[in-house]
Length: 352
Image (cartoon, rainbow, N blue to C red):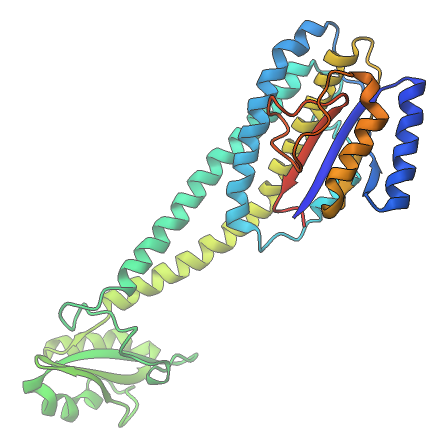
C-alpha cells in the first residue's frame, strides 16, 4: 500500500523558500520522497464558480473511488501498469481534458467517462457471474438419474480419450442389458475401438460404460445405441463443456477489458483529485491563479514528523489551523482535514 500527500501553497517568495527547505529536509532525514507535481492553469474567471464546484468534486472523487475499489476486487492480481509511476510523473492529459474548457465542463466530462465504465463493468460482471453460477450449479448437481447425473466426481481424466481423431462416449446401460451391451457395442459402428468399453460407475438401476471410437462415427454410433435402448449421458456433459468454454472466453475478454478500463478510471480519479486541489487553491489563495504544488510519498513510520515539519514551515498561512490531527490519512475531503496549507491524501491498495 502506498500513501501520497499532495500539498499546495501560494506562489510567493516565503512559501517558495519554505517549499525548497521542505524538499531538502525530507530528503536528508528520509521523512518522505518528494516529486514535482505540475497542475496547469485551468480556465476560471470568478471564485463563485469554484464555490459551486467544490462540493460536486467531493462527491465525484468519492464516487470514482468506489468504482476504482470495485475494479480492485476484480483485477488487482492482473494489472501490469505502473500506477505509482503515473502518479509521481503526472502530467495533465490535455488531449482528454482540454485546459481551454471551463472547470465545470471538465468535471462533467470526467464524470461521464467514469459513469460509462461503471455501467459497462456492471453489465460484463453480471454476464460473467451468470455463466459462473450456471456452471457451479451443474458441478454441485450429484443427484438424479444416470442420464442426467453430473460425472465430475465419478469419471476420471484417464477414463476419457480426446485426441484429434478419437473420443470417448459415456453410455447408460440398465442392469438387465449388461450382457447385450458387451456383446453388441463393437458392432454399433465399424469405427469403434475393440475392447474399449469399461464400466466406470454403477448403482442399483444400472451403470455407466465408456466406449472409445473415431469422432467421425459419433452420430452413427449414437443413433444405433438409441435403437438398442442404450442412452448417452451426453446432455449434461455437453452443456457443461459449453459453459466451461463460455466461462473461459468471458473471463479472458473481461480481464482484457478491465486492464484497459481500470487504468481509465484511475486516470480520471487522479484528474479529479487534481481538479479539487486547483479549485481549493483558487478559493484559498484567490485570483489570478497563483499557487505551487508538491507531491510527497511519506515514510510510513514518519508521518507524524512530516506533518509537524509541514506545520512549522507553512503554519503562517493560517495560524488558526489545527496542527495535531491524528495520522495518517483520514479521507482527504473530510471536514476535519483542514491545514494551513492545502492537502490531499491518496491511499489506494492498487498503488504498491
